Image (cartoon, rainbow, N blue to C red):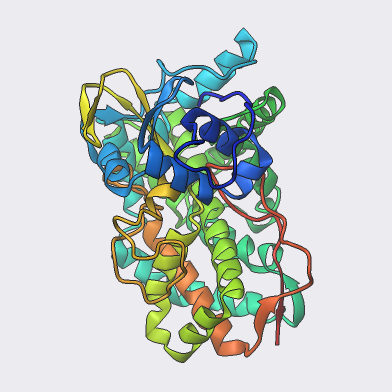
Amino acid sequence: MPTVPTVPTVPTVPTAATVNADALLAELVATPQGRADPYSRYAALREHAPVHRSSFGFCVLSRYDDCQQAMRHPGAGKDFSGAATALGLSEEEQAEQAAFRNDRSNMLFADPPDHTRLRRLASRAFTPRTVEALRPSVLALVDGLLEGFDGEVDVMDALAFPLPVTVIGEMLGVPVADRPRMRPLVRAITAMLELQVTPEALHAATEASDELERYFAGLIADRRRQPQDDLLTRLIQAEDEGERLSEYELISTAVLLFAAGFETTTHLIGNGLLALARHPDQLARLRADRALVRPAVEELLRYDSPVQITARTTYEDVPLGGEVIEAGNTVIALLGAANRDPARFTDPDRLDVGRAEAPPLSFGAGIHHCLGAALARLEAQLVLDRLLDRFGTIELAGAAEPGRRDSLTLRGLVDLPMRFA
């Protein structure tokens, strides 16, 4: 993704007279303040420049309908080979960035027919029936993790990370002892999804990607020798049965499924519990009416989405927001802005666990809709339900603000100290 340069900041809530869409965008992407509190900037962009042709080489969308249409339009896809390269990077560094975003063996960046083939093979493990069958085992995992909750707990380390990494690790067949070391590697790789990437983060992401690929290449070799009842073995067998998954496609798919299987769910749990702790009236409402657990998870996804941004390339002229975006443009959809569009959500900055309006765009839309969305929802629903079962007190611990990751595309917490009793 291209980098935007730092420019002078603008007021947190700019007026029509002071708004400068490029300055807002640069502040949003390139400053810690903008990344930490994007929603006021989103609101200004949505009001004053909802379809913004930036000077940084891409078009930015901030309304719900426009973002959804961009993700669903058959004339837009994931080939970013013509996108602008990050500013301030050497030619070698630009090549590193291009290699990552042009990896067609990864369904995240693939278009049909490759995307269709890769997704079809992996999707068999994530059907609604398959996910629902996991409910007892996920519930047992949640209960086991909550056994250690007493007094003050860092939710990110004690629950939000270990739950989803255990679920996807068991599904894929990643040994228990290997899972903890994956966390920093996956976090390093996600820097590549940001609109701004430093040379240091770029190199760290490349090294982490290489290490994960070597690891899964070894695991795949083990499974070829000794097949097991896991998703990795089934992917290998599908390849062997003529589905034409190359060795590198197998490795790339395994890395993606493992990383995506816990990274976004970790932040859904963390962001969601932080939002509820800051809105005790909504937590009390949820406690009084457990039928709200399902809509509450949808509302937490909307209110502070773990995925804030996605991108597409237009392969043809695409009508969006009353304009025509010409072929060859990179389109940035601000999902966090779309999820607070007042045209779709009443009083969108308010947390309402009983909200029944448009579905959030947090998992994307169209053919790239998140493969593991049902699994993430199940894990978050069970976490909320069991926390409410076990604890009468659920609140933030200490006066310090929870540490937040300095990123925008993936929005999440580093730590979340909470008190349970």
